[in-house]
Image 1 (tube, helix red, strand yellow):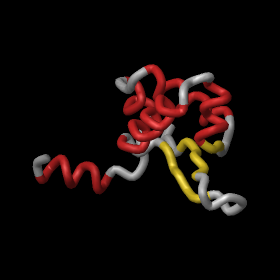
Image 2 (cartoon, helix red, strand yellow):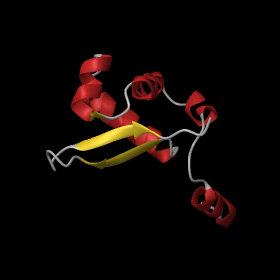
Image 3 (tube, one colour):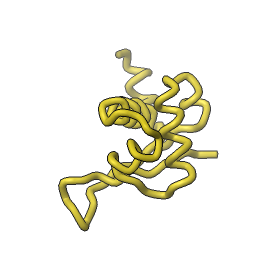
Image 4 (cartoon, helix red, strand yellow):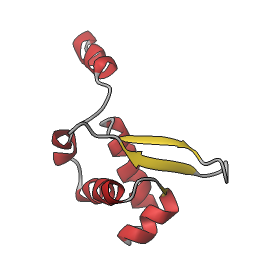
Length: 89
């Protein structure tokens, strides 16, 4: 990674829908589901999308790389993470 790419990633706070456009279909589906549901666990996303858990993990990782989701620990169950969409319109 070049210095300019590194700087671009550091200054980029939130992603946009343009960043999601080139992602795999599973990542786009997860992004749309998160758009309509404020906060969801990985299991809830898998149930809503009917995607396997492994595919949901992959999609969440790709969305995280593009800075379009936010993840935090669940206060009710610290073993789970809560995901929400963080996209600049």
